Image (cartoon, rainbow, N blue to C red):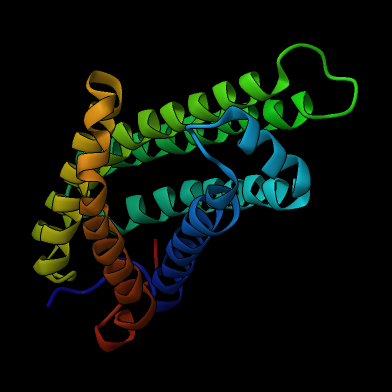
Length: 227
């Protein structure tokens, strides 16, 4: 097992960032925002959000925290894998930063939905709310195209590193394929997007495993402080 290019503390900090991404990302989409959205009924969605504005706002803030952690993790992983291949590590970081930027910018669509439901808002508020929420979903999947590319590059870097188990690289690589296929279906064949939904369990397991390795395994191997 090769020596890690970062200190154990730095690698664990990267793991904490990854954990924040997983908890905030899943929490915002599944626990906070998801139950309020019915893509088949603009009226029910508008009523649900109006009844729980704070919950919807908290989902946006959770995504903001996720984006901040994602940017930080992108930089940390660049330093971790730079000795393997500086060019690939830099490219992977850029793809991850593009994903974070697109997802963060897409949150404005959710804020627009809130504004349209405020007292005095004009027009078909419910219809526009659902339109902005749908646009946010497309923006999220657009970001995941770049993240899918990041995963494929990260998998290559893991497999060539000698200090991260290759099984994690395989998992991250499969995650990248799931993200790419799911996002492409969203744009090319949206009616088929639901078919791949169960496959998102693969990234959840693989990324959680990588996160746990970053948090708990570095102390078992030799490390060197970042120069």
